[in-house]
Every structure is written in structure tokens, then in C-alpha cells.
Image 1 (cartoon, rainbow over the protein chains, first blue to last red):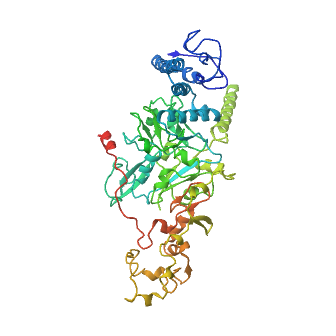
Image 2: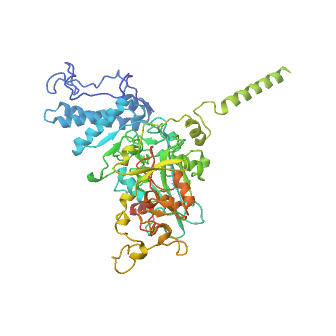
Image 3: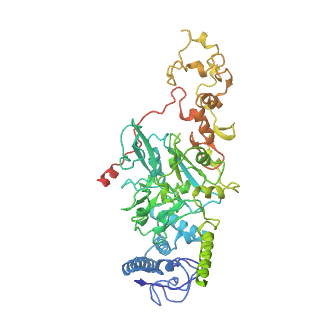
Length: 365
Length: 208
């Protein structure tokens, strides 16, 4: 095992290169190592190991040699890129800005540990980066969990007709990869009289629905209150937010898929290739922890549409369901409809005996 | 004797320590999510979030049924030929002759059977602008749920509470729920069977 320890620091959780900053003037050496000429007079902050930042979070961990080399190579590549563009007289301001953003994004900390300012910072960078790459403007939120809110969901098995409008709405809302046809929601067609037999259920039917002698049941991430998936994450890239949402920091996920193995409900999905969404279909109303565009090799899942739910809206699946089988709301509000369902209908959850405490209940009329 | 006593004392100590640590004593630890919801919602005073902004241009009316007060979409302005008396200038019996233009040919009643329901179970030939309860009382089209509740009392209870009927706008208060006729055509209230919205051939391939 190799442990790489860089210096400790205090305020920011990552280094700033300040490549384009006119303020950071100095007569010292330039980032490219030259002491004179060629590359202007701004001094990159690289080397200021005295500050606590993303370096610590990236490197100050026990990792095996291969991972360490990988991290170093990736970081050096970005660093070298950033420095070469910053020193280049021919590359434009935009390229420099892009390099600066890439640098800061590479060395940012875990979202969970960020202050609100840092959260805003990364969101701004991501928005700007998207703008530089595509020329399109998106809006991205870093809205935190609201106080006195705990999200819960109820699914009426007698009402679901298997139309799968929810699945379509979810894919469009959450910018899921179109190539691999990723879907967070599965609707299981089950034979009457056989109970909840997932082995014999069909979750990819294509015939007129509802089919005679069958009922339909949807599954997705249940946002367990005691989620086993977050326990197994070796880098703490997934956690439970205060409003009960179980979320993933796609920039912190290393793609080990332990969480997928730990989830007893098949709630998580993995990007085996770079997720692609046609530009005109991209939902531009995004949240850092939600539907922002993902990359190759990270895990994602239902977030109860955090970009919508934290704004008071219903998740896309609830809005799309034509039968009203899906009920969403605040479990802490005694007057909410979800509470009425829990208190007045006979509800149950899947694999309750595991103690995962899913916040997703099923009920019948 | 002393060793017995010491063992006894240690035993009692361990038991006490066990009692104080095994069960929840940290107030943030609960045995189950139900306990947690119950405890944490005791002092619930509302949130800053609201569905108001998501209602948009939808015209709603506030209704109170039993203990529940919430909003439903306004209905009368959505009925194409409302007010009915603009055409129904005379009682229906007098208008059914060949002298008048045929109307409502597209409506075919598919709701219960003919022993239970026909047009005048809900409509009043003498007061076309309103519905009529089983006991002959006037019900406004805006409150047509009262019409349905006469027979579908179980669904009505679920709807009042929020287990039946789609919630629109958002989850946050104020609550806006679809009323019966927003999802069910009162003349043919069942849901039609149809093809699913999507099919995923790749999932099939991946599983092979």
C-alpha cells in the first residue's frame, strides 16, 4: 500500500490555479517551471500545499499503487494540460478558462463535505463548462434539503395498469442514457394468484395492457432510511440527505459498483458507456445530485427527482401516471396525503425483514 | 465468598450497562421509520415550500368534505357547451322530437347497467345546468364528486384522504387533486386498455 500525503490546509477543499486571474500577479516562477519569459507573469497556486483542499481528499487516503498511479497520471494530465494552455500564447481565453475549470473540478472535494459556497462554486463551473462545450445554457441547482421534510412514496398496486408512462417521463426528466436505454423504474407484470413472484414476473412486456389475469407493480430506488448501499461505498460517494433522499456524487463515484451489489432492490444503474442524450432532449433544469449529465463508469439511480421535489413539485413519474397510482409527499407533515395513506390503508414494503426501512410503501384499494 | 460477590457485582453492572446502552437512548435513534416519523412530526410547523407556483393557469375551487379541505380543478368552464340551457330551452321531453337538431350522439352510456343508470340518474331534464342527486337535490357540475360519492363511497373516502385520485401541481401544500371526472369519463368511467408507452429491446438483449 502506498499512502500519499500532501500538505494540510484550512479553508478551501481544492486548489485554485487562477490561470486567468489578472489579480494574482507575482514575480515568482510560472506554473510551467520557467523562471523567466514566455508564459506571462501570473502565478498558479499549484504548490501551495499548505492549504487544505481536494488534494487531501484525493490523495490523502490509503490506496494501492495502481490507483495511486492512476490518480496521479489523471491529475498530472489535467495539470499539464492546464499549464500548457495557460502558458500558451496562441490558445484563447476560452480554452484557458476550460482548463481552469477542469483543474478545479478535478481537485474539488466530496460534495457531501462542501460548504454552500463551494457547492455554488462547483455548480457554476459545471454550468460554465457545459456552456463552453456546447454553447447552450443550463440551469443547475445545489439546493439543500429543506428542514422538516422527509420524502416518502406510496404505490397503489390496484391502480397501476402497466402503461409505463412513468418510465418514459423518468428517462426524459433525468437525462438517462439513450444508447443503453437506461431506466430507473421497472414495472413488473405479475400473474394473479402467484403473489409477488419477481422470478416469474415480466418487467419488459410489450402487449396491450392491462393483460388479463395480471397485476402491475413498480420498483425503483426506495430511498431506504437505513440504506445498505451507502455503507459499502469505499469513497463515500453516496449518502442519505437530511430529507431522506439517497444520492450519488457522480464526480466522486469511482464506479466499483459495491452499492449495486448491496442494494436488495435492484435500485441502482451503472453507466457502462458514456451516457448520451441528444442535445435537444436534454432536460436543462438540473440539480447537482440529480439529473445533471453523467459520465462513463459511474452509478446513478432514482433521486425522487431531487431537482423537482426540493422545489415542491411531484417527481416526474407521479406527474406522468394517468391512474394516480403514485403518491408522493412529506412524511413529517401529519396532514399530507402520504401520511393519510400510511395511516388508513394497509401498506407494506418489500423485504421489510432486512431492516433497510424503505420509504416506499405499497398498498391496495 | 468474595469472588462470588465480585462476580455478582460485575454481573449486575454489566446488566445495567446493557440496559442503558442497548435500547435507544440517543434521541435520533429509532427502532423503525414509523417511530421516527411519529416522533419527528410531533412538532411539525410546516415548510417554506409551496405548490402554489406549480398550479399555473389552472383554475381551481376549494372544497371541504368531511375533515379534508383541498382544491380541485374548476369544471364548469371546461364543459364545451355549458351552460346547457343555451340549447336546452325547453324540457327534454319536448325537445326529443324531429323538429330539433340532434345532439349528444357521441355519448354512449357505459356506466353500470341500464337497470341502475340512465341519463336522468344524474341529469335533471327540468334543470339542465345542474346535476341531480338520487334524492332530487341540486348538485353543481363543479362539485360533481358529490354525485359519484352516492354510489362510490369507498373510493370517495380514499379520494378525500388522498389515496385515490391524482395529486396535481406538487406534493407541498396547498393540495390540488384531480376530481373524479378529470380521470374518469362519467359516461364511460373505466380506463381503456392500451399499449405501453415504451419497450426496451436492449434490456432484453443484455439479459440473454
